[in-house]
Image 1 (cartoon, helix red, strand yellow):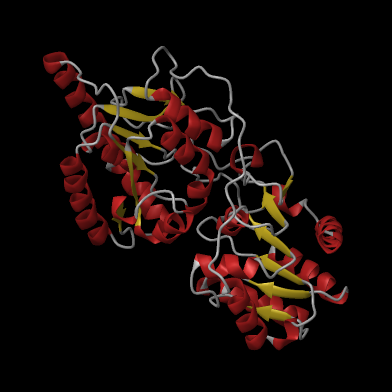
Image 2 (cartoon, helix red, strand yellow):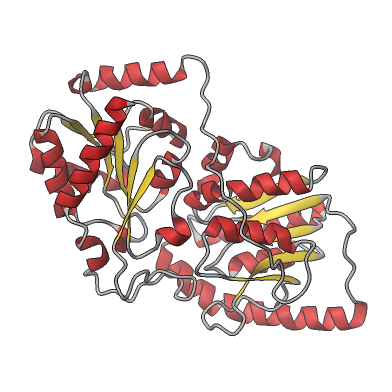
Length: 405
């Protein structure tokens, strides 16, 4: 399903369903009261949509395991993100419940199966980590757990998701998302309004991805075999695609200028991305018209393969999106463009990540309150004011530091 259809269904169907479930819960509690477990034995995390959010949720997964070592962790997610979760290794594969969101029919069928599975497993706690959708809160309630943790807006408009969360965590647009995920763990056994009035915990970088013996060497050998022009060159990877949210993309003209300048300075440049990004990548390659500028869109077979290639590169330059978050699992120096969203909330948590951000009066414009539907007319000045000359200077510095390390 495309993102606009998802937004429409979430508003037109989600709002009345949330209202009906809220009314049902009020009646149920008045008749039967609330029974809560003394100590959670099964915990479900609902984190449907964002691959990058799975990386940002690493501190939450670690905290849950530390605080409830006897509990089994499960997750409900979209099937397309399953690979990233398996890569992180934060829970057993058999504890993953997936839903296919490629079509409305597939979504409906998988949703019913997921609800049956969740009811059968009898969860004690469900944590809804989504900010922007109502469907996740509906799944959270229908799971049947006595403790339901999720974001709520207090008196702020634009985030109505029902009133059945009995551990409501106030969404805080001034705190990094990883910190807010940790607050949800604290909310499980907390009371008061708002719940979990705790000092911010110090965030740690996610653990580096581990590889089997010889795996990186094999990937590197194949890369150089397929693209001999990379031999002996510093390799700069570039991810120019905006994905589902094109407003987050640095302008293609700027990428063309930057790539041409990097090539003139003797570096190799490789464009990365999914097969859908190939037309943009090929336009940049054609503009540069240089033997050391190559198109790797669609080349990698998995996220793991992509990260293995990261280990053979010297720098990554990327729009806000999956590759920037995944880079936190490696040591690759990375420049990430922010603008429609802010690094204060979404910056990858690793020392190798360097964010480029111009805080205009309208930035950030993609928020929990507008369903990530920007009012921008397409003239994303927050990104256009980051010039190719500025980025080239930062890239030079990082490449020099990488060479000296």
